[in-house]
Length: 112
Image (cartoon, rainbow, N blue to C red; front, side):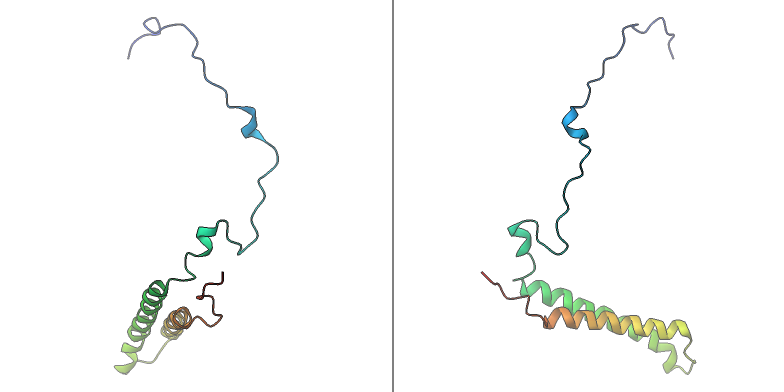
């Protein structure tokens, strides 16, 4: 709101970034599936309560999705492709929960 005369005429100095941050080489990526730290490796391997909670939640969510898709069929409406797809998704979510609960590869046991 003022004029240019009321401002100082001195140039503003901006600090330059150090040259070390402008390296041309990208950082190496970790191998897929490899833990980056020891704390991360044990995060879900020995947590039975986490698996029970998430697995049962997924089974319940899958059951609900399947039940909502099945309700119009019980009233006598013919199932369309969307209803069938919703039932497949519900069953898939429930199966994912069962897999988390059963832990078929035995990853839940600590190997030290």
